[in-house]
Length: 364
Image (cartoon, rainbow, N blue to C red; front, side, top):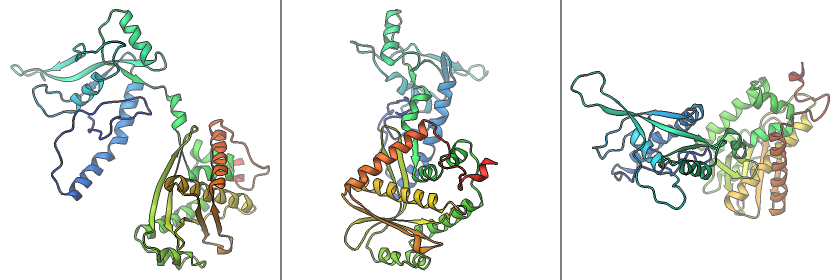
């Protein structure tokens, strides 16, 4: 069963596009109740996309979808919704297709005599996009003299590489050490003790941010730049930003975004991972990259020529990093980020230096 998606496509990037079943009745609840209901409904959509996609990619010639279908009722059930989406698909060239009736509907009376058989499943033909494109599939059906039938077109998994998402922390790990990136994000090796402490500290910082306790945070950082933030009118906590590129989607969650006293958009991060002994240079370079990466996303988000950034070092305040990025710096950062993403997609996970002071634990 699938909740009604509130967007025109269940997942356009995966190649699965369903039309909405209808406008439905207007929400008459109070705004807070409507918001909570909407949030609850949307939480299921991501999982539904994965379930349907797996079901489609496992199907060979056809897919059997189960659900409620009551043709005499106005209320849209889950099977009606899928049926609507499949039947409002691409149309054959040069023709208008009436509502098709060739779908095989499987009935079940539950074994009870005298009970009207109700349709509870739907058999759908599946044509894979790696075998035929949409136009080729329709042309093949037309040449075979078959009536037009709704088809479910599935994009091959390989085509998803262009929409892969890369967070700032993932790219920072790659800049720090490609081999460590491979261990963490490809092999799935959990973080070491130092990273665990860093993650716990970040969780504490984020909790304070969510509660708006900027002055409590200011006490943790002697540079006192947070006092400037606390005096601003509208600091924004945990801002999620995403930017599409030909190589993939660049995204990050900025802990703190605000306009400084001069009205310039600024961001603030917290550097908590000192890294292993001897790796200070690599770690600092990776954090500088992260600051530039976030500044780039913030520039693109607000379409402003200048962004300021601060990355406060909790252990050694004197090593805190600051920058002021203009348009030329943003262009350089974007080119650098895209080069790094291409290296990841090309599976370049060798060491930056041998012996490597960052990932030596993984070389044993």
